[in-house]
Length: 502
Ligand SMILES: Cc1cc2nc3c(=O)[nH]c(=O)nc-3n(C[C@H](O)[C@H](O)[C@H](O)COP(=O)(O)OP(=O)(O)OC[C@H]3O[C@@H](n4cnc5c(N)ncnc54)[C@H](O)[C@@H]3O)c2cc1C
Image 1 (cartoon, rainbow, N blue to C red):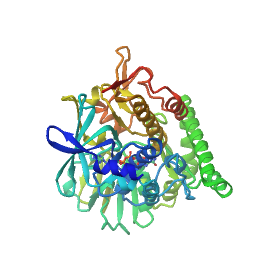
Image 2: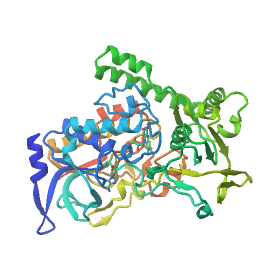
Image 3: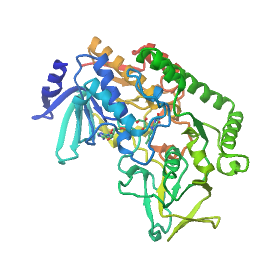
């Protein structure tokens, strides 16, 4: 550990003539769930490599620190959203945001990764030099504005997938006329008092279904206003089997079993839904009908026109959304917004919904690699023209990987596998004396979209996203078991990843 600290802090080398920049073997961008996980994996699997994390914000946690809206929680179970190497030991499997943040912080402390983080460093640009076999990384201190330059052998982008600067805000006409307050969940105002107020939540995605039952506890009434319905599935917030196992077995073993169980169940449900969409659709709609009672118009409000998993399913714990609707504290309106009025919103149908507070749960704005501008030997990298290699590296871009999780299962399942695989690449390079690893594109591989989701946030950004290829290793499995086998046991030197010596 002392050795690594020494390397991390004092490895100053010459770059660009006489400018001296600190050099690290690995730079991790981002100290969220993925960045902290990446640090732990490197620490464990690549002893002797120097590394640091650059984090734009002043704190650990990324998503789990940024979002502060009422009821913020996971929508997948913590047995699979938690790290493979550190058990989740709390009773709730669907956990609240502060508990998840605490888990990420404790993990960072336990593995000493917290000491490697340089806070308030926003990475702006990274330039690869083949001659030097290193990245020149240019960052800016978000507290002082001061520029910071570092070099690294390998760049691990753990910068998430959406912009921290702003969420997706569709323009609704005459919003300036509205006398109440409009808020976006990404920037929840601390002073917002909605007790006894009429609230409209625009949207019916993961955020909307979280915020509606929570706000309904004290608001006069909450209306979830959606353009079209989403599949909503209720699951118990506590995983009885996981809790039973934890009381009887050592924490790590209990966690591992519960993790495998939940992963297998998740994969089973996903595959069944894709194979048998009509039957799955009927089952989900029947669950909503059962929860809401025979008189409720489930056809209008809870029956989407697309198939399950064309977009992410929304999970609600212990039927909380359905219960809020059943008790009359919340309701759902389905229709298109025509405009704001002074006192609320008017729909194209002519219906008006009165509101004191409007919550725009209208989604995120995707971004790529934390908006870092990349160049390789002086040429700008356009990732929309690149092919994604094994869902982590990009054709023609040496020594750079992006740690991204699953969209149809818990993020961390894939993020963990990606980090393990990157550690295998780093160790292979060290053993064989390679300085660069570059995925080289095979002209016979056809391009395909990387995501098969029709969700608005993906479709709005599809043009800027890298593509996947028509065959391995350019095609993504979207299946944990297949990914685990390929990434844990597949050959690193697979003929596609080109390794070079200095
Ligand atoms: C409200 C919400 C709930 C979610 N719930 C779930 C869930 O239940 N299950 C699930 O699987 N997924 C969920 N997700 C997806 C979620 O984002 C991931 O699970 C996970 O938290 C992503 O972690 P990350 O570290 O990759 O990214 P982030 O949490 O976004 O962290 C990225 C970090 O990188 C930093 N950064 C970005 N760009 C730069 C830069 N240029 N320079 C320096 N630092 C930079 C950011 O400041 C941030 O700290 C949810 C997402 C949201 C928004």
